[in-house]
Image (cartoon, rainbow, N blue to C red; front, side):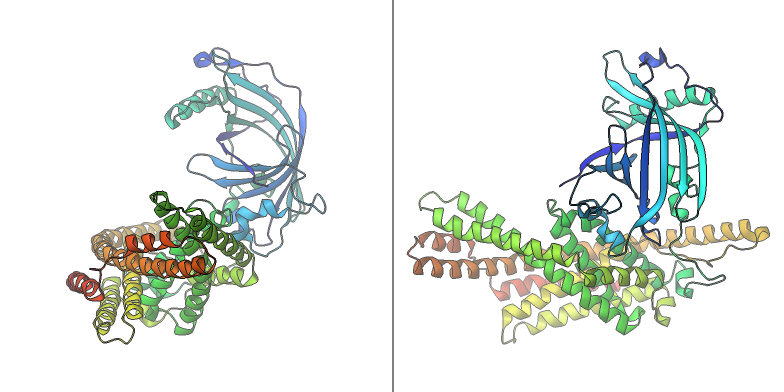
Length: 558
């Protein structure tokens, strides 16, 4: 069952004593409805032992009572938070403590196969006041909450009172107007004695922190330093590790959409995998060889799983579009064989992808990526200046592309050799694009400096990072230019490769149709439409040669 999704935009306020919610009658045309009768909400919050959800600012709870009883996931959003709701009876729950698979699906890439256990139990006595406009539209709701919380793991019991101001469906349709509404109500609440809450969520306060991200995943040994390369934003290691961290985060973000088969999600995840492999390949000498090989091998396996689904999806879309333009032949049999076959292949491949995304092997890959980027196994080369090392690595990638392109003419299988040129061009493009958008890491000691020198050290670090950022800004544009020049070559070779595979599939389908006594003329028409007699290997190589010359010049100028 798919959860019901909505956006939560709210503000919280601490309140002392028994002071009542102030009257908001007449505020900017707002009408305050009479307070509802108090009701009780009880909720159990869950997380892994290492607080994986909390580190990502995600809340998972099971709530009873009120109008939204059920399982709730709250995740960060551009404005407010995204809430996903499921009813209490979703799935085949073994008990109230068992978290249904449907609820865990959107966060599987984060929690993986680690068990989730209660983090806190919270009981709230809530009284609400609804705010409406002159037309009766529900703008917002003020909840007056008396909260009792038990920190399950810490063994601490806490009580407090808070006011919660939350926008409802009738709130203004622009962010600026919504903010103005919240600000106007907030001013009345502050005047009445409320103060902005020190914790963004009840669960944070329940476990004694202001922010969920304060719940560290693991204890860090005092004085432990990151690798020297990561302490200098100008180093090659700082830039490339920054790129790998960005891509690892992107892969985890791609995961729930691919599981849910959201539009283009499998393709996006496959592309992220390819980008990761390309960065590891092109800049691999900055890290220990064995670690890079293992990661690239596992990423290749994931990419292959995603590729089966993506290829079937593309094939089905292309054939459906081509058959729409065929009027002079009967296409029913061809549509069943081609479009229906592609859709069956996609359904089977997607099921395989989902199985893999639930596998121990996949979870360990994610663990390895996070460990690699948190404490990368770097070599001394990573400490060298980024400008020098990235130029050298991109130059090698261009040289490899040129060598593969030159070898096509005398290859025994030119098409296969040309496919290797395509992959080399793609590696170059993704490697350049990754460092063009990367935010270089610049990590200091795990422990804070002495109080007396903390402010000075922070200022020096900020100034150093600002200078490095300014220097790197020029390089970003040049790396991005390399990626832009490589992109048309990648697309040209990719389109040609896909077209040849498509023609081969049509030929096979035509043979099968003929043997089954079906009308096979439509297959010939589709092949004729797809063929380009002037698109020879030599023509493509000529285009590739021009691109390589341009890329060589760009890399020399880095």
